[in-house]
Length: 323
Ligand SMILES: O=C(CO)[C@H](O)[C@H](O)COP(=O)(O)O
Image (tube, rainbow, N blue to C red):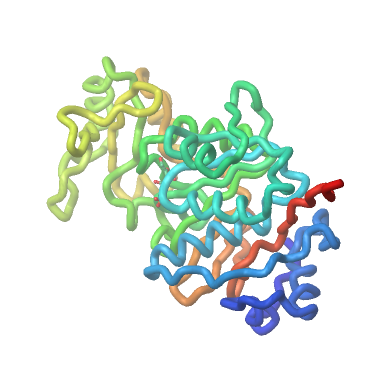
């Protein structure tokens, strides 16, 4: 990881409508990954202040922006875009890098929502069957434990999300402070999202009950269940035409997430399990105080005091002079 500028050195950038002073530019030079020097072609543009958001939204924005600043540079051309309510900030920040930065990039979605995001942002859309080797994928998470294992699939996208996580050289998670846990299942209590072939759902429910997934949680809320649609009669159907089961397990089973993943994946009829174990290079958590906590796979924790309003890598489009 590159050294991080102090909050004082970044402060002049926040909320300003003036071009950043040279001191801020030189501080940002430290913030760039070594492969992305600040050149005359990627000076920061002038900025308008970012809109003020409620705390959780602001935290999502911080995480998304910081992850793009660190992991989406000039070398990243094939980029996986995850699902959920944090990922739009990732796309915003990528767009803010400028048309020139995005001209030769291809963006691969993890589902319908991210496909729409990519198209609406005017970015180039691809699919993982055309581009099976991605430089980086950035995705949200429902909960992350202290080993960077994650529960995913709150939006029923875990199959494509896992394919894009595995296809990427670097897989990064972005989330707000509520998702930062020690043990999975602490805050995301509704269970592990499991995608199943529709005709097999009843058999898999029985298997999961035998494995120890309770039908009622200790707090009296529903436990093991087929996920039902809202404003739709019948079950949720994933982008792949499958059903989703939510299966909670007691803490002693959640503590060993990898073993649990293997056991569930072995059940015939299961297509994919929303447990992502030992896959992430880093998780970015936006905090309520405006900072970002970055946890890496080796257990290290880094804290950014703040995130600049404008992207670290920003390449203005150079227009050919008219003759
Ligand atoms: O796994 C997912 C969808 O299947 C999402 O990434 C996860 O639900 C996080 O979403 P959000 O950013 O809205 O908290």
